[in-house]
Image (cartoon, rainbow, N blue to C red; front, side):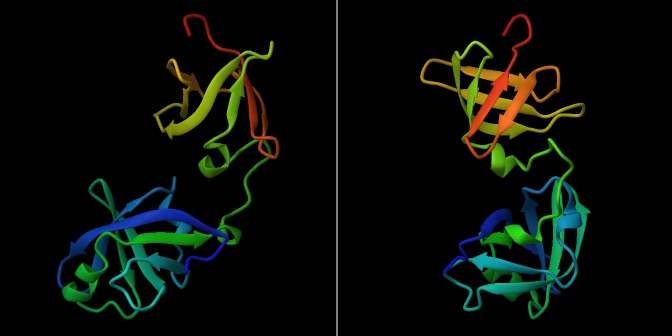
Length: 169
């Protein structure tokens, strides 16, 4: 059973080589979150143990490679294909003030300063210069740049964000 404080952080998409290395699709901004010795909860019906210890991780192609203790060959890595990897939220580093993890923003209700409802923040698109928030309501989708000049306030406790849309949005 998945721990209550677990956060989906990656998926295992396949095996790499014949020494038990896994290819992963990481949902983290940086691979630094996967520290050697750190433990990840594994959600898959094919794996009898729910926790795996990270030995190492490195960037590779469009994803990353990760090795786990006790996953020693390709067959063992293949058994993990499709597994969801979770991290305990308490393991996440503290962020600077007015910075947020994406999971804290997904689902937040977005309004203009005059109280007009724009929709729910559905996803975050990372771009080279700044993130972009995908805000959807029943009628349309709005792409909101995650800039201080646009995002005026964020209240994660009330699940409310206030934005001043640039001209043309």
